[in-house]
Length: 243
Image (cartoon, rainbow, N blue to C red; front, top):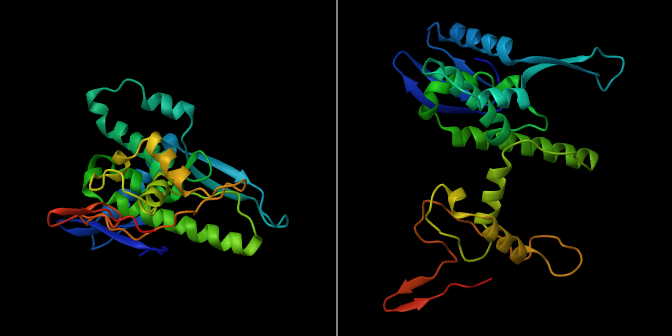
């Protein structure tokens, strides 16, 4: 099995199990699926991929060669164009490429890393997989890289990972009355007006403009009752407004 930082069981089929790994998918149990997957990835790279060459930080070392799929205007124009009924698989594959790069697992450049190409072969079977866990694992790996570089060099130019997940994670844990608690996915509960209210509540007064004023609490989306929501006790209503 190829190495990786983390792994995730995401489903099963008769004959073999499938594990999604942050970076690639590994297949085993004696089937020919491994070679099939490699062929699919090679097809993706040949059809949509591009190769980049960049200078090594150590000028004495050879140039760094990387490959991936650029999600550029040309790619998006084709995705938004007309599709025949028999092109369903290609459409879903391109849609998955764009979704991974632009929303779920974005990097700091406008191209999908070759490490996620195996995932892009799952277009027609997308509903069988745990994409939430993939997004979380990918995001946490980027956070680790950010922390490592920040505490080593004192600054970081950016971070990859799903910013939408980070926003929802932050908003949902602010120590304030919840917004439509129980509505899932949580992105449906928030609009720009509610986000601005939450930002204003959490911003320190004064010229600094920093955040963290009201603090955070632990919440669990599976719980019916939010810690800061009004609670009914017998015939009376208690508003939980502790800070």
